Picture 1 (spheres, rainbow, N blue to C red):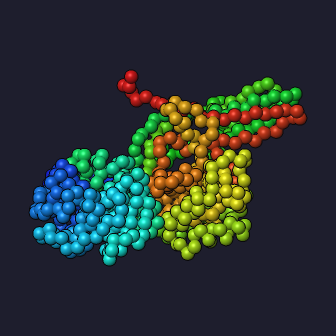
Picture 2: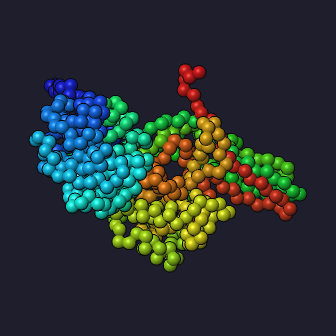
Picture 3: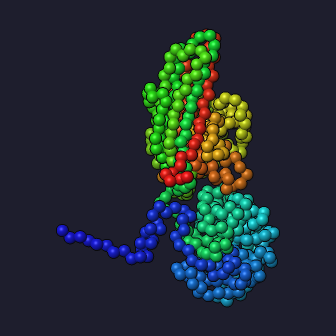
Length: 536
């Protein structure tokens, strides 16, 4: 029997290793920057250009080796970001507040435009025009190439816009205060993707047609980063915890509680949570599954006398991660590509959705318009709900038309309203419910939290929380789409009208009593950190 032996060279092995579990923002490689105060960069189709405000030079760099190919003097004395228009370099100068068009061969200044903002730093070319960022006021503007005036203005993603580049569809900006890099819709300024910056003082950005590049002023390094790969999400920040959900029923009065069923939703494996062990007390219970495929433990009690306390307990050992989805709108499939069973089940009506109500039907049409991309449909509904509602506990969970007309609601009412509009628009949506870490690792939760998920073809079920996304910064709004911290043990997936949980999540109780019997129900979740072996 012949054996074939494959010998891989070291560079190929490194390439394969770097691209295993690759995700957007992952550093492919890096090399030293050409100076100690590098601020801007761009790509000319073959080489990188990097500016340095200490040496007042602009360097042309070999992207394979990091070696300096050539250099020219900067047109001003505080050069910031660079852009390449296909033939010429552009450089924005922070002190002179000017934008220079430069001959890349000898540095000759061919044209000058005023940067009509107080603290210009970022610069990008979109194929027809320049975009300039104002770092201190945290803004981005597209300029008129005739006189430098703004023709379109966007708020910055977070706290400071330090570098810009354009990938053919989206603007990318760096924020050295947040240590993050953002993919931004140039029409609305909304953040679509958030990447961790490779260093602590992220400056200029460049796009070479496949990879993003970033120059960092603290590490004095140049980084090549993945823009898009096969990985659709990234896990981080593992938390191992024991979560105890206690469902406590106290009976008062002159008679007995004749019978009671206590339902506790059983958490399941998800990309961001591993269920290591589940234990119930008392042991005597059954398990059932509802129409939304949610499993639950059922505890049955009979003839409970007054002045008695009954406890049903679920203890879960789990490893929970923070998860961030990297959703590229152009990669999201069509509504027609969604599996039929998901489309039918999760666009159905419900007693709190009332998607056949003319108000919900007309509002959904007004919000979505003629948009067909499921991602943008979801974003439009997300924006409407967060813009037209304020968080307020009114008591109870009202139907979607009432909540949307009123304009206030709890997290559950935000969720009900979002799902109603999504389903009316034909976009499958459901909710999940969770037990939440409240501050310290060892904490008690008696409020819980629920939020919607939408089904995006090629990505699956993605969290989208309009109540959590009711924020002023684009970065913070985007953080509530396809992103969860490790603070949540998700127990419940539902679409409403469950035959066991009703509209509740985590738990539910159904009981019968004799006259003059009062039942008090308290349910709370306790978090305890689980130490690794060998920890002190």
